[in-house]
Image 1 (tube, rainbow, N blue to C red):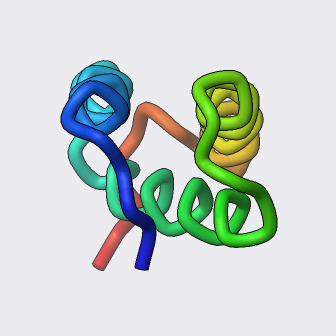
Image 2 (cartoon, rainbow, N blue to C red):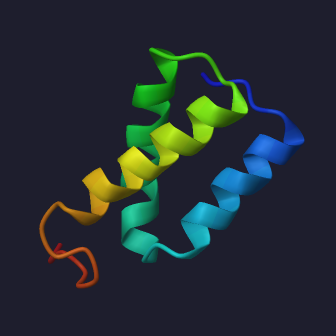
Length: 68
């Protein structure tokens, strides 16, 4: 579990809004995995969020829902 300040949580929620709904969970899991190895400083959060976003969007068809 990650402990985020209200401001950090707000930033993560803002990032989720730009993702398709079916990619949000994947992004949050990727970010949590990356942040467990790091601290939760502002710079770490921004850097790891950007890296997680690129990783998630780079997998498959990011803007087309995957078939069930």
